[in-house]
Image (cartoon, rainbow, N blue to C red; front, side, top):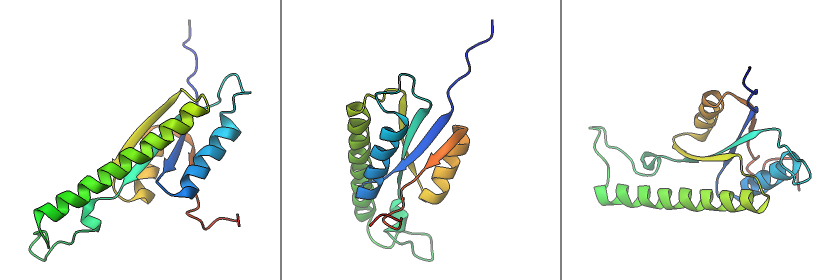
Length: 137
């Protein structure tokens, strides 16, 4: 007996911006509406945490320009921000009864990390917000 085909995957990138949250809500309303009995996608929500290296410079010798404490403080702040973002995304998914969803936090440059996530999950669709540069006014 053949196994049932798995659902196609949709990866959606989220950050803490209003645009990203609105994009997540719009996507859930369009593709995961409660009126649809069987949701067409497995959803993977990905938040990309910037590396603290972006905010804390390195000297020519490869050493941190600043203190280790500064680096750790930035990293802690970025981790807390990522946790808040994922918590908000979980709450939105839960409020819209979307259960077939994974949440991930990855570190790096969002342009590359989201493409890598789409490849890793063999996504059929990658959804990202416009960072306020879209056609909406």
